[in-house]
Length: 165
Image 1: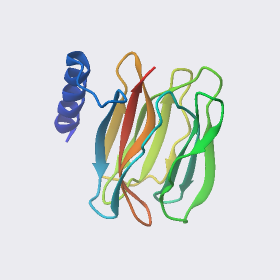
Image 2: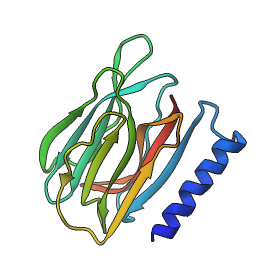
Image 3: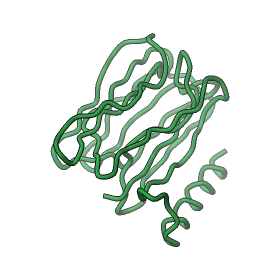
């Protein structure tokens, strides 16, 4: 499985080097996880940066929601992905902090998630299950600004949306 993810990261890096990206200079990596639920991808406005991640978790990652700060200073809540189970928590980003990677474990659902920033590493949200690891890291000059994957009652599969710093 790691070879598949390494290959996906190499493809993304090649696309960056060749200048292949969307009109908004955003790309996606992933997802990892199960095949249930419905697909989603955060449509992140150009220039928006994450200010907080809202998480619901228990034995699994029940839901994720990115909160963005727009270039004009306003706050925008992206769609919540997942259900209403688990306990609510949040990971607040400090001034000048940005998300460099996410990682965790998965099987049929995303069992756990952890956020890595240019300043620190979050606690692990979710349970201790899962048969496989996932890890998505933004290349230098890029950051994670949104989520991509599948969700229903839980987050079934997780990937990331990358944008230039």
